[in-house]
Length: 257
Image 1 (tube, rainbow, N blue to C red):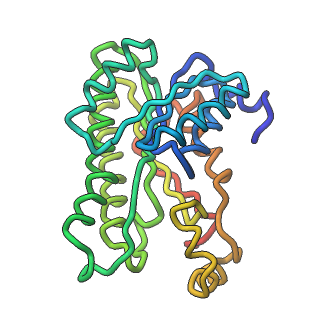
Image 2: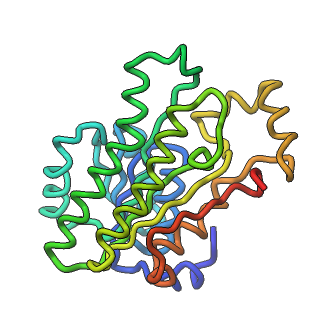
Image 3: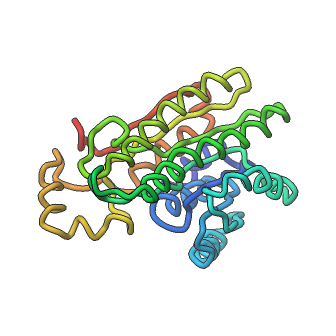
């Protein structure tokens, strides 16, 4: 983690950040980083027990955090979700659209249900979370930030996960389109495209012969680390990113040079 002086330089004190998919992996890391930068953090996921564990970890650092159990696929409940946060005094200034999922399989083998869940979780939910977030801030006249977590799969063909890549490619166009629509309202919309990073969703793969072979093909012969995304997250969240909107930042440790 960065030292305190550098973290405070991002100007996130008195800001509130909402991180979806925060019960594990990148979402949990994002919550820790934003809390260390003195933002208040709302952590959201379906697994309440995991969220409560993360909440305790963050509270032990002296930061402010609340945990909210919520399935982002319940699109009809998103408006009420934000209204509830506002009533509690926790309406976020920063939305980190991180929740996502994947099912590995060829296009011929993937079920209709799996396809629909991938598209709903990775593309539809972020759109409606961003829309209701922006609707609130436009009405209030507040500047705000939206950070969509995409993937190198938005630009590269990753074998066996075509619908996932489709959804992440859609996130990049969504980022640009919403940035254009809301630019005059001072709502910045940007995306981060991580490369291959080990998380609990994919850790099984990297221990296999296929996974090891894939790593050996990367220019640096390694996976990117979760901490490699800290700089992009803080840039797009903080004062230094004021002039950035409609942008996507690739952080892949040179995997796709």
